[in-house]
Length: 141
Image 1 (cartoon, one colour):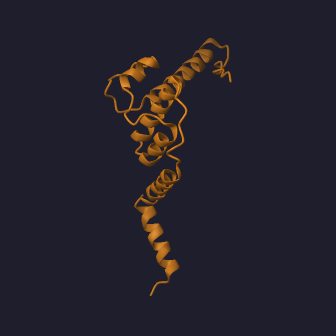
Image 2 (cartoon, rainbow, N blue to C red):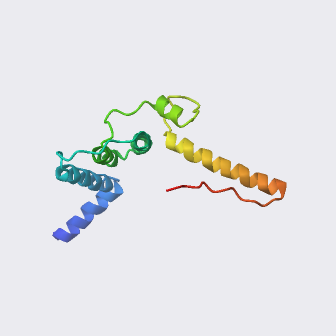
Image 3 (cartoon, rainbow, N blue to C red):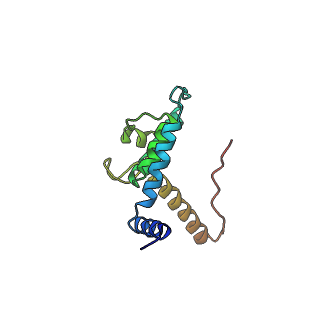
């Protein structure tokens, strides 16, 4: 007969192999967070920038099926439970997508834009023989 430790080990390995152990841990964390969260504590109002940033993150999390992380984001940030309109977000960020119903999160479009812009600048520098690098994005804090 297997010992308790061996049984735990087999169960853990089985859950890891089936890809559900991480989901179970995330669900437990989300439930613990929800249980500990002080519902009476007023959330500060969200700025327009925070609403947009949170929505980009939510869209990314939902696309990648990080549903428990997404639920914690909503609870913790005070983001409205109804998602912001995707066309509104794209318009606010000046993003043109192939299709408004594209399943790819807008965050991927933003990252892809900056990556391709960086590649173009590097290729142009090689072509021009200048060897100059792209100016970094300057963030003022």
